[in-house]
Length: 124
Image (tube, rainbow, N blue to C red; front, side, top):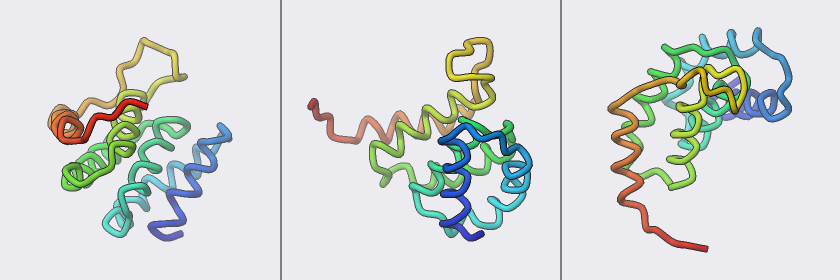
């Protein structure tokens, strides 16, 4: 699978909560080879998928945080929100389990906050 297909595949497994740890483990080794060919939405899909359904691979989150950090100033607000939620939710047993705090990456969250502050605020 390539830099477009892998994120979509992972997203599909995560969206239906399909138990696919083996797929996620294999993907964690493949993503570093593909990340530079991914666009912003693909990176968000990978991070969201691992946060939602995959085993927590902190080195993978750190790599994706680094790559996404380079792109933050030009990212759409939706991508910023998805990244923030995904990092905050990673490693939790379920969405409402407050015993775990997600994957912390202080410079990345500072970058998200700065990029979000530059986004136009609109109320709908």
